[in-house]
Length: 500
Image (cartoon, rainbow, N blue to C red):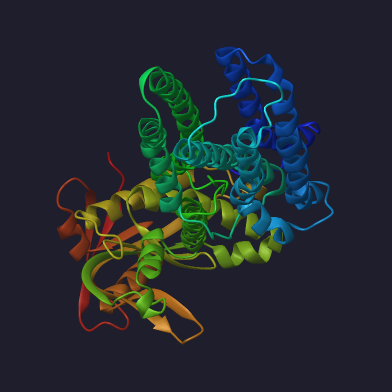
């Protein structure tokens, strides 16, 4: 159901134009069929030709000219001679305009046919004169039937035409002057009362054999008419609703590429248009979240997008977290020896290797500066065993780097420092620039612990708070208390070893 740039075959547009004129010819076809039935029942073959001639004059010539005038702007749009906004209202109101045209021509034709015997115009046939009550009833029901039928046939045709324009021109109706309740009301009223009006006219006008004959004919005609009307009502009214249901089900399954053609000018059309706008908004929101999530973690992006009242700020959160800092051993020397493009390739591959490992253990990468990376566990993404997850992530990072082959024959080794403690997640910045980060003494300690790897010749160092929080299951060696710059008091650090 999504819009496509692939146009239908070239014959599709002329075929759709022809379909409109065929739809407008339905009243003539029904009137001609009714005349044939009348002739057969009353054995009056002489009246068939004049009846058909009068019907053709009104319903072929008259309706044909009127239909051409109504549809001419749409044909010009198909031929690229008019823009879509110039024909949009004409297109949206095509069913009503077409039905009104039929009413203006079918009504006088039927009145002429019903009244002509009263003035002695019988074309040599023995025609029974109907009472005034029966005449009025026949006129009202006959005209209403053709008007209602034309409306719903053209509505069904409009559905097909709008789908064609949607596929080939990527245009949709955006004007909604109609009302769905009126369509339903007209359909229900006609189906409910047409047969009753005809029978009431017969009962009030005739008796005996003629009453039986007239009633039988009217009931038969009413049943056939209601069946025809019901079919086209179902076609015109249920197709847009079924299409909307189709779109909703696809969106519920996560498909945000679906777009629906708007094929009616009523509340269903407005709902379909709103559906398209909603899906576009959801798709844009997903795009923003996914793109934003490449710069900040998706959990932060979701929080920012969800709380618009804060103007892009995430609520400050105090929690215990495990912090990880990493940097590449000898990166300064490496940068001096290699060209900038080579360094960029190495850095990209380095991050492509270690970031998925951090994410796999539910860590969040908060910042990258050059070869340095800052990640956190349990904030902003809640995690129960965050200390153990950070230690395991560190071991997996070292293993992944040993397995990776880097450009220029470089062996990349990284140093990792880990600490656990209380931090606060905050949004800092100005009205035009914002950044989400973690603050607290625990962050500073983690950074200093990472730097101590140079002093101890280690690759993974963790503060005692992390080792205790992680519990058993990790091999580590206590290196004793160490002075950490910027922190009052010593910090006991442990060298974390890979499993034996």
